[in-house]
Image (cartoon, rainbow, N blue to C red; front, side, top):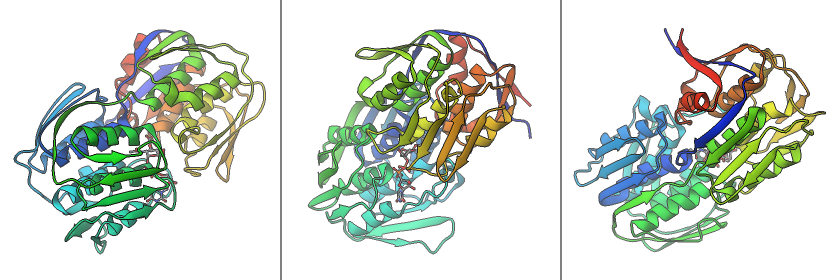
Length: 419
Ligand code: EPU
């Protein structure tokens, strides 16, 4: 079957400005959360990515009226109906699991397919389920393809997460906004996207305290009203462009960035030797070799994001010695390693750690196994000699708004072809 590929001829210098979109990982939770509103919701600042389109289409399956126009989405829930969602749309992205929490909150019942998403190794949802059960839900997991979640009544509860999980924290918040009494989530995720979703729910009348800390308290309310809301900038998209600029930028200005959200990456890039200027809402980055070898360990926020360990990896080939990257969140998130080896890179992985040695990269045919592996291959393609062809680019389009156009505007020799 014909498919689109991205091609890059490496060695061009990047210069100019790029505007960062709204955060994918906020948007993919906030869109399902709109179904909790009685009335109209107007969102702005959405990224223009396929995950957004898929979630909007899931809202429509519940007879919600939607109008998606660029970065804006209008949602009207006045005709909402509960309907089963056991279809292939649900499987196409991981974040469809937020439909569970939102539908449980709104209807006390949902039937939904099992979530898919990037293959990063095991990605269980046991903590989400534990939270729903604590709130009073019963779960029928007898089907291989879908799950039925139902509560006679949702009651606030104290929930201690076994591990820090962005998805479980948000999903429990979504269900708990209508639970009777108080829900306390302990060992909650502190990621900016958790705070953004909480702020969105608060703007609809939810009572939530402590988002951004390890203890979140939610007091249930009977109804939530419509609202207008602007999604925060995408720190992972910003970080990915910071890596591209460090790889090949004469001077790249990255606009719509929250410096606080990219602190761990900024610190590592500075350690590497990258020239970075950060002000309130922008970063100016210049490639400034020679780079020094560094070690990276991914951690929950505010530590170094797992989503950025793949995009930063090609920079480490430009360093003066061996570097080590350890992913403690997803120890199997190293599918990019084999692809980089195809490009001539001296990189190996063992037990959740990649060892990266100085290398010269050559263009090759490579495969984007997941979204951030795709971003990694783009960074690698920018510095490689010759043409890199990236297959399976649907993953890249799930998370990066108009990435080919943005890079072209910065001066990269990048184009798409159907093969
Ligand atoms: N985990 C469990 N059980 C659960 C939930 C999580 O064992 O019930 C484990 C996971 O397997 C993982 C760790 O806990 O080892 C953290 O997972 P988390 O739940 O925080 O991840 P997620 O919510 O599924 C989100 C982002 C990911 C990002 C991670 C970590 C969304 C839609 N996805 O996933 O983003 O890597 O948090 O920060 O928000 C991406 O954007 O490329 C991406 C994969």
